[in-house]
Each structure stands twice: as structure tokens, then as C-alpha cells.
Amino acid sequence: MLCDMSIATRVAEFGAILKKTNLTNRRGELRDLEQAMSDLAKRFITLREAGRNLFLVGNGGSAGVAGHAATDFFNVARLKAITLHEASLMTCMSNDFGYENAFARMLSQLVEPNDILIAISSSGNSANITNAAKRATEKGAEVITMSGFTFDNALRGMGDVNFWLDSHDYGFVEIGHQFLLHNISDRLNEKLCEV
Ligand SMILES: O=C(CO)[C@@H](O)[C@H](O)[C@H](O)[C@H](O)COP(=O)(O)O
Image 1: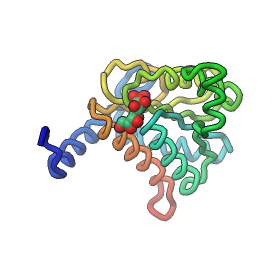
Image 2: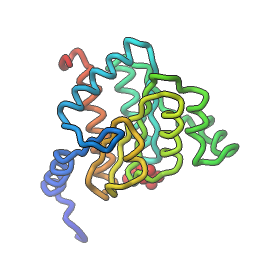
Image 3: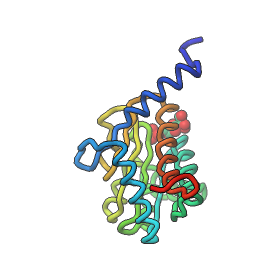
């Protein structure tokens, strides 16, 4: 075995990374995780009451994370939640405007003030995700970023709320993001608990 992939070791490592979840605001100020999660759940309730939209973007495994979370936000939390990586539209936008501009082009047309964008990138340095975050902010939407890898990755400074996981391991960062998003949608699940 090249490295220790035992379940016990991986669970311990994953738990330690999650416990250290770093959450900052747009000014880079550190926020208390429990308070911020509670505030976020309340923010999603106001989003639902206002009939505004929730967009989620990511590449590769993070597109999968976005898709799972969008399903939970739609089905469990009753939000207008959608991803933007439907193959036909994504390939059209990428082919016509460049991959790095694809999500931003879509958001130019779709996003409105007081919508929310969740921008997910493990490295925090994928240009199509940082461009999406920039465009959503320009359009007056609130931006939540989820990243990992280096502390000073580009995405981490671009959101109103910025989650950062202290790991360079794609598996931990992706599943960690999924866990955190699930925790938010679970808070809006009336069958599980009330905010
Ligand atoms: O799932 C994985 C790795 O676990 C890959 O598909 C990974 O998501 C892709 O390489 C992405 O392109 C990585 O982009 P990013 O999350 O760093 O922005």
C-alpha cells in the first residue's frame, strides 16, 4: 500500500478537516461557523419567501456536488435551485465564448439582484468559477464560495460568504463541501428540524 487509506484513518482525517472549516466574509473576517451556518439557513428561507433563485456551479466532481445540492435545495428546501452545466447549453456557451466564460455568460442572462450563487471549486482557481462569482456580484446577487487547497486561492476572496477547507485532497474537499451544503438543506427540512 502506498499510503494509509484505511477507513479509520480517513474518517479521522476528514473529521479534523471539517471541524476546522474556515468561514470568512467579503472583508476576509473570520466568522463563527455555527452562527454563520444558522444565519445561512435563515438567509435561504428569505430567498424562498422572496421567490428568488439559487444557482450552483462547479467543474467535474464539484459539478456533481452542485447537482446533488441543487436537488436537495429544490426538493427538500423547496427553493428555486438549479445548476448550469446541462450539456447542450454548457457546450454551446463554451464553444461560442470560451470555457472560462461559459457560466458567466449564462449568469449575465439569468441572475437578478438578491439571487444567490454558490460557486464551488476545490482548487479555488478555476477561471470559469471565479468569472461566474464576479459576474453574479456585478449583477447584485449574493455569492457563496466553497474552496480548498491554498488559503489564498482566488475564489476565497470573492464571496459574501466563503467556505474554505484546509486540505489539498480532492476527495476530502469535495465531500466536505457536499457535507456542508447538505447540512444547510437539512436545516430547512421540516421533517428533520426547524432552523
Ligand atoms: O472529481 C475530481 C477529483 O476528485 C475531478 O473531476 C475534479 O473535479 C476536476 O479535475 C475539476 O476540473 C477540478 O476543478 P476545481 O474543483 O479545482 O475547480
